[in-house]
Image (cartoon, rainbow, N blue to C red):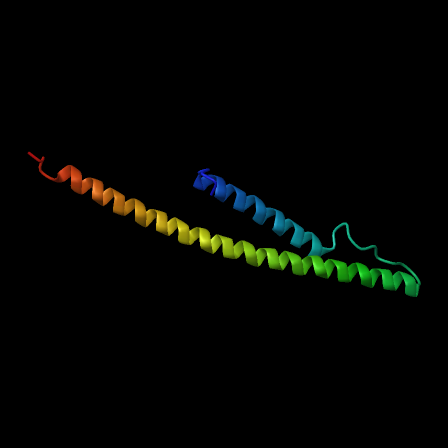
Length: 107
């Protein structure tokens, strides 16, 4: 895209970084680290309403992360398809070049 060639290793490293970040975010959301305060004693309706609102916001974030994960899996599948196509094209070009090298010289 845009005439810039991105090496395959760079795409792999980027994918690993994104997957690690998403995994850490999901882990923090599910474990509750640094998140919602745990009330002690009596809980007022206002505090309860605020906690429910916070939970709904976190569930929205979780849904967003699931959507992004689905998109990431789709990109990974498409990248695999592109890798297969490039490999196929490289094999075809190599066969063509080998055929030209093995052919008798034209006189």
